[in-house]
Length: 390
Ligand code: AMP
Image 1 (cartoon, helix red, strand yellow):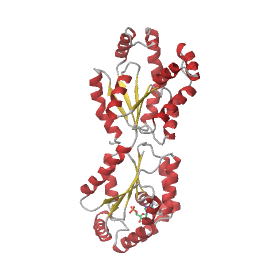
Image 2: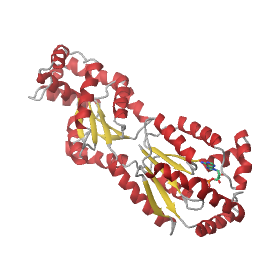
Image 3: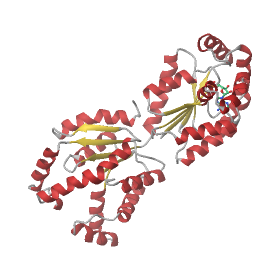
Image 4: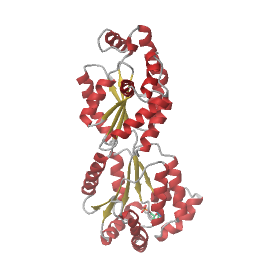
């Protein structure tokens, strides 16, 4: 996840820059100030409590802010990350944010501090007063807000000082100039982030081939559960011997065994790794939950899903052709097994795609054509999804 705070004094341009960031990136956005203004407009009890404080330029109680943030975090759906604008604003709120992110097993990626001198903030906010009609944009209240920022908000940076996640950015110049500076830093963060893809598709859709091509292009490691099982079996270990019973009888290997193998593989690869492409896993909803848990343990998650789309008749043609080559798998041997595998995918694996579709970008790729053509179709949408771009 990419969890960003836009930090800076009132008038630094956080709202404007957030808007620009949200046009480009797929993040969950919250401006506590905006939420409070909305509560005031709707005259809710919470809004009524906050109104006088906001109009005097003070900071609203942490208690109210916790409620707002709790509601927000419960209702988010995008897995890419968060953009916080106007929160945290106190040392206490920095702890609150830490707790909220911890609960969903993630943490703050970076804080962009927009540096703008007080005089410029004052000037900008007085200009805005004419346009937006905000009750707190007059000279006296702006003065108080800047003071609150200095006394209560700036000290919270101490909370993060040792973590090395503070980046100062000049907030002077046009909005486009400032955005270009922020965007450049966003690119740096994204390039540091691990990427984990799942390559979905019916048997015969070309997953193994495309996984290998994508892995090469993106410097990722392919994790194929079929491959892991095969290796373990050849190793002659106790688990390997246990596996043989299942594989030789064409039975599904129990999740307990597969989990251990994936866990071991992830541990081996975890240092020095930019991420994974999962192929042949997860195949069931249970396995999707397991994979999410395994990745969470490494403080990472699925970035995007690729779905290779090939018409059913073409799949049958491909699987049948494969059954007559050297590369054939034991399960390619008859029309009945081919049909069983396609059906198994439809019934058990398609729900996994739905499960992820609500959380991460899904790249639908046309899987017909030569491997090179298919790769050409999918590589740029995959890269876009990796960058969290809209
Ligand atoms: P903003 O839209 O971020 O400039 O916020 C406008 C006003 O809302 C602030 O001056 C505060 O009174 C209140 N406010 C917004 N966010 C917070 C917060 N995280 N903690 C306390 N007060 C806040």
